[in-house]
Length: 153
Length: 90
Image (cartoon, rainbow over all chains, first blue to last red; front, side):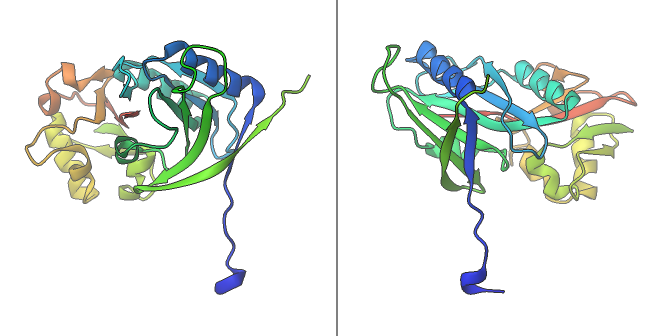
């Protein structure tokens, strides 16, 4: 079938409030350097359940990179738990929460939600941040909605 | 034989397999053997200059090959090779 009947896959990132808050806190803490990390979840589930804050080995306001040894440990741990990186996040500390050319060029998890947090407005202080999510596949960037679910219990 | 763990982004070259067997006494020879069976994969790992790509991490028995001789790293039979693209950006 073609035309109007073609289904469109609507993507949305669902995150619980606790994980969202932890990512924002991490970004604020590391400002003015970029913060980075992942939220792992059961393979194929698209559920982001386990937040792992990573060290930015680049220690830079304009670049981030997971330490190579930490990266191996992280993937081994996810393998052992049948998890995958559901969210890969990092912060921009002087620019908007939109993937840079470098972000797009280096994105290598086509199934992940790439989250960008911008701390340019309030830095380490209280105050709102820009928090946006994208799919990045073969150099194509598609923004998606972020749905924060209030934690239960 | 050496088991090579393939990251998601490169599984298009391995028919979706997460791990494949390959042979070689050095990492460089192993990459050539991978290329013979999974054409196109070498270009994703190695620069035209012959160096490993900056944003691809390769580990032999949990050691980052940047510290063990790069593509010259020797492989023993039964070694485990893990390929992971860097998680990085600007």
